Length: 397
Image 1 (tube, helix red, strand yellow):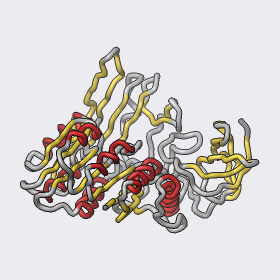
Image 2: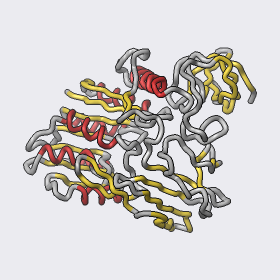
Image 3: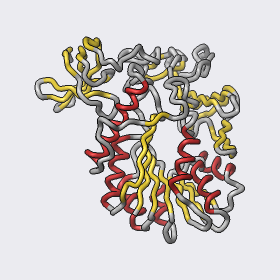
Image 4: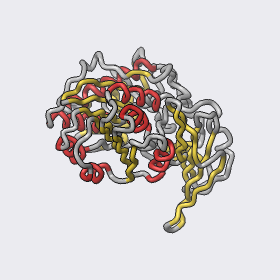
């Protein structure tokens, strides 16, 4: 579609920077603000274009040699901010969340120039990821997808992963169309599970190494979670969010708490311990595997019940109201219907966690429309080397 020379402006949600060409907005990937770059236009959306940097003419002082050897314009789509200092990346992420909250949520969190995401744990940019999924090519090799492409990069040295995490997996002859799930658990073991390829209506699952379930530990409690199921990718995320929920929930003996999109029950554990036997915690998730893990891990907490159902249906069936609700929805957010149900139930204290800036901001706006206020808000750099974030808000009435 052609090449242009542009000067980039502020960061946009999704990992690009905004530039303009003859009045048209251009979303530029692999750029930092205030750089002069030569770009290749890769998509025409009518009123705006998407472009990739092919040469940096005047670099930002925040630009460094990429911290991931396989990412970039012609590489894998894994680490799209690997070329920014970790400190600069956190500022960019904070600015994006602040912008999305103002634009989509009608809420002013901070001035974008002051907003920043917090590091998790020691804040190391590399080697933080404990779970990853690889796909397989027609010639039997495992790899990461290029950005928005079915094509795979079969060099496996992603900067997010600890050294040796994928050793040996590039050497096997895998069936085409399979998924490889890899988990490094809290006992130091590696587990590799192959799912697929799909044959007719049946998808086979095979344990290649280790076990089907990985051992995870949070606050002295043990979970055994299927390698194919969801668990926080950052090694410090589960402990960090669990502590945050414990602090913000202010749950006490005898209270009722709802843990929505509860997964394996990390938050249900801290809530159940806080409300005691006289209280009640309902943890809801659609995943049968996650629900099984939650029931097994929380068997000693009689106040916790685990429901395998949609959050919308489960909320509609709940008698009375909760004293506190915790939500950790998927990237698409909780949405109007669920938030309307929470407001109708007059839940006075809500902890909402979101992993996508735009959907998080829209959800915050929905709470505000129901008379809630944002009492606390934090943004975490839970996915270093990438544009992804995790945000958490405490909403009260």
